[in-house]
Length: 317
Image (cartoon, rainbow, N blue to C red; front, side, top):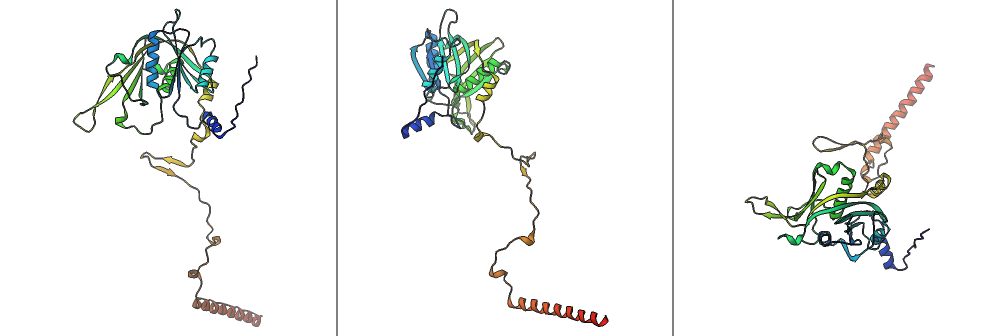
């Protein structure tokens, strides 16, 4: 079966702006996440999805209806959802006898499935179960990954990248101490479990300039284990990670940095022919009358000497 995609063309100025906004940008903003349910869901998954949605807001969209989707067999409905709501990330919750309390986290590239990881929610405590459960909307969290296992397998590498994309917000060049209000910790244990903990950063008086920092758990507290995964090919991942030409830093030649951090540069200067340099004509460079008279007298003297020398040579000859 051949699927023909309709080519959308804008007919108004406002429509052109909308289509330009949907096109790939040189500098992309925070990625949006879409939360939806599968055929069946449990109360634990619904509350967990609500907490993750609250942490991701305002770059998130929640769908309340259940969907007959088996994502590992057919990902086309999920791709259609993400394209409709312009989301590059998705979180699908499902519950069945074969796979209870199932959570699938994945992302898209060019409106097609890039990768996804299926997780089993073994235990979960929610934000309402903690005394400190409020955080300002849109707060950029500090992400901490504990354990060397995150770099040992390809599945955990992709899962780490998924977590970073999920909670990453705007780029920050400098960090203000009072701006660190939220921290999320991800721990990969040797037993194969993934522990997620969320803390609110409390700044308290310490008697000196630097405040005393305390972490107060605010939820959710989640224990996960790996199930299935679908990873992209090397060519597809390379294409997804490709940077545009505008962001590539060109290497400058003949530039070096010494041990003290000082930048040194070498430049090539061609041969300077001073005699051919054209100078601007101005009154200050014009010769005076006395200089002209001296030059004429010197010329007459030179001419007379030349004439005398010729006469002497003729007499001698």
